[in-house]
Image (cartoon, rainbow, N blue to C red):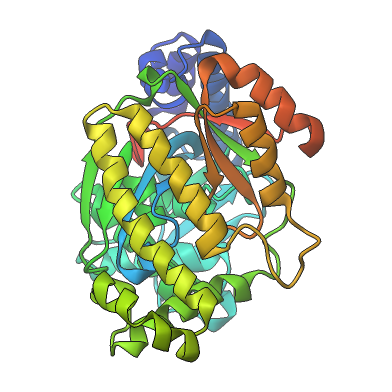
Length: 431
C-alpha cells in the first residue's frame, strides 16, 4: 500500500491514468478518463476523512455485469454468456489492526461486522451486513487468517438495471479480503463462488453463479453450468470496441417490486417439465425426448411450461453459438443470435411483462421503440430476469445519437446508458 497523500498526488498528476483508462475510459474519450480520475480521488479523500487514523490505503474495483446470452438458462444447468462492464463499485481500503470490518458506503450508514462470530444471523437476512459476514466466513473456512479492514465505497452500478450491484459488491469485498488476508492467492472463479455462497446462505437469495462470474472474471465469459458447484468458465477474447457497435442498457422506468412470483414460476414450470422425465433440470432431459412428449406435457404441465422449455433448449444452444461467433470475429452472426434470443424471450419464455398486471408493458414498449430506431440493424432484447427493468441493445455507432434521443424522448432523460465490456473483472486497481 501507499500513503493516502501519495495516492492522491499520484492520481492528480496522472501517474495512474493508464490503469484507469483500461477500466473506465474504454471509449478513448478524455472526458471519461477525467471523470474516472476525479472519482478515484474523491473516494480516497472520503476514506481519509471517514477513517482519519489510516495513513496507507489501496484501491479496489468490483464491476457490474451484463447478461449477453442465455436468458434464464443457468438455473437449468445450461450455458450462459456474460461480461463485466465499466460501471463498478470502487472502494478505498486499508487494514485497521482490529478484529472488525468497517465499511462506509456513500450515502449509507457505517456497517461494522466483528470477526469473532461469523455464523449466519436470521435478523441479517436480505441485508448488506449479511453479505459482509458471509464472505468473511467463507474466506476463513478456506483456511485463511482473517483481519479487520476499513473501506469507503462508492457505486456507479445502476440501481435496478440488471447489472447486479450485489455481485459487484461481493466481488469488491472478495478482492479486498483476498489482498489483505490471502496474499492474493484466490483466483477470480473462487472469489465468485465466495460471493454466491454469501448470497445463498447468509443473504438468503438462492441465486445462480452467473452474476458473480460475470463480475469477477472480467471480459466476456462463457459459462457451462452442467455442474453448478464447479462450472466450466472460459473467457471469450473479443474486442467489442472494434465491432462498430455500442452497448446500451435502457431503463424502462418499471419496477421489479412484487415480481418474485413471476421469476419463481419460470423455474417451477421448467422444473415441472423436467420432473415429467424424472429429472430436476432440463439440462438432463434430451431435447428429442421432450419434443416427443409434448402431447402428454400439455396435459400435465400446460402450454406455457412447454414454451418455456422450448426457450431453454434454443437459448442454451444460442449461448454457445454466440460465444463461438465472438471467438471467430463474426459479429453479424452474433447480432443475429442476440435478436433471436430476444424474440424467444418475448414469445416463448414470456418474461417481458407480468400477466398479473397487463397494463404495465414497459419492456415490450421499449423493445418496439428500439427496433423502429434500429431499422433492422444492431440487436435488441430484454435484459436479465425480465418482466420489468431494462432492455439491452447493440447499436451501430452511427445510430447511437438518434437511438439515445429516440429512446429518452418517451422514456425520460438519462434512461439510455452507454456501457462498455471491460477486459478486467474484480481487481486491485492501485496498491
